Image (spheres, helix red, strand yellow):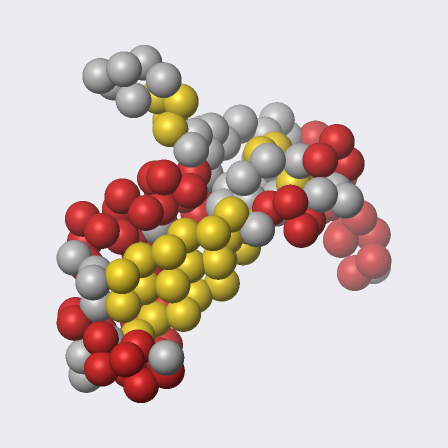
Length: 134
């Protein structure tokens, strides 16, 4: 029956060993110190988009009810740095739709998402849009 086939399939999947995902934080090769996810996000966005303004806010504390104060993301990554609010103002957004802007940022941060970055709230504007919104 289909129900038995699904149960058997689920049992097989559950019995497979899971590979540990890479850590969200990395070690700076020059200093040997941990680099925060927030700093990594900011550095990658600055390098890729040359923004006139960038603000990366770690909102992970707002989600501190997760067991042990750490977010256990869908990728099985446990980190205290899991939720971010990012504002980016860049001339490179000129002519892009909001969806394209967000996809651009997501592509820049692909490694972080693959490593378990859980939530990213984005505000993306051109300099003219940013001035209008003040």
